Length: 339
Image (cartoon, rainbow, N blue to C red):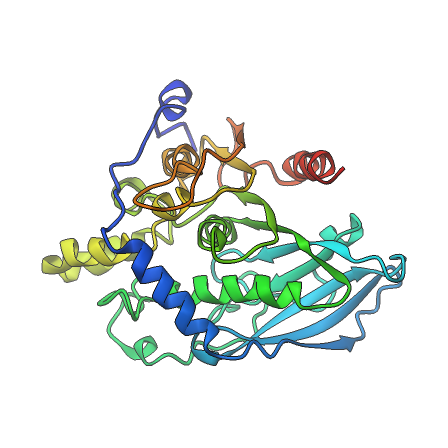
């Protein structure tokens, strides 16, 4: 894939035209309050993972609407008794789920607690999932996939539920006695990276303990531009839907505005390490830089205060981004942050 987006010097200065709805703060305040009205009920059940260096717990907690959400908690087997560990809350890419019990333990191998959230209604591609999306809007008319599920209203949009699940996943991870609730790191690639950005914004002023965000080639940023220029899915699901429902463009953009990472990034206050790939035709680099440049800026009574941030750019990579090379940079970032 050749370079198709803006050149790097323009990317570094690019800001999205997306602006927050006037009631964005009130919408998410009420959404989080509504979610917290349901007891968290986080359950951790030890499970055989066939590994000698990692201990694993099968996790269930209540997410949006009190629906049960699955996850894994991986802990290093050689951890010091009575010494809680920093935890990396890990969100998964589009179509994937939490995976098999021993499929991804890399953060635990690095010495951290690793909490993997299953993504409701996914797990049909990539990695296995075990969490349904029981919301009634799942049966509405939408394009195959998830980008237009419930998009007729901000209350029913699919990612409202996912972002709430992600917020509650942090609370669930913090509730385990071997986790240091004051040292939570958010991490994820693609959709997982987009969920990281959203969660970093949503916890600001609402939940203590999150200390860093690692959004890797994040999805769900700058919806209008992404829908216009992205040749490969999942953003084209929106365009395909609008090709038949021509009259719904403006109303759908109004709904998506409440879930755009560019808007939620402004609220974030914790240090972040982003990544972008210049040949990425799934999450174009301009959409990633739109989020990066907004991150921590604050808006409309939000709590953003110019959070420390950095971005690694992989010029000759597509959506795979930096992969193992970037993970080393993330490890270095966390080692410096945590001491």
